Image (cartoon, rainbow, N blue to C red; front, top):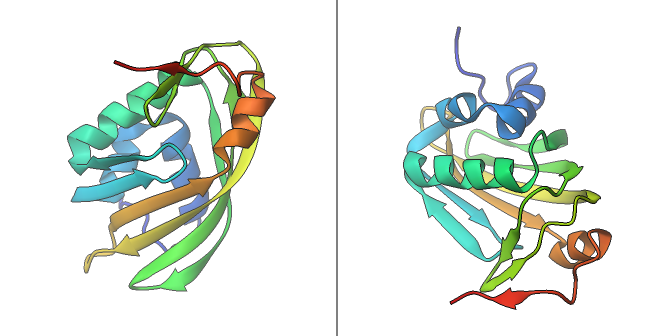
Length: 149
């Protein structure tokens, strides 16, 4: 089975499913030297191993969380896509130099991904933009950040 690429039928559904629950499928859609930046959280991950680690942290934060991509616009150089991330917070959340406690509460936040593509159509860079404060408020922890050492 071939790896879905931007512009293929079903790409957004496959990409959302990969982000939601299948890190191997996600990494197959990315260049080996992919650079993922979570602008809201202030973090960047370089390469497949670091992206795998980030995905594992997301799964601990919100097991079974769902990422749904809604629409995308772009070309062979790159694209932008809208998405919604929702789930239940089961683990702590790290934003910048702060850690926020787990609450067991649900959240849903819209965002935008801006991606560039490698010559072979795989995702080379991915930057996510979303409202961190909105999520912290939904979780009831906007004022509970603890400075990380």
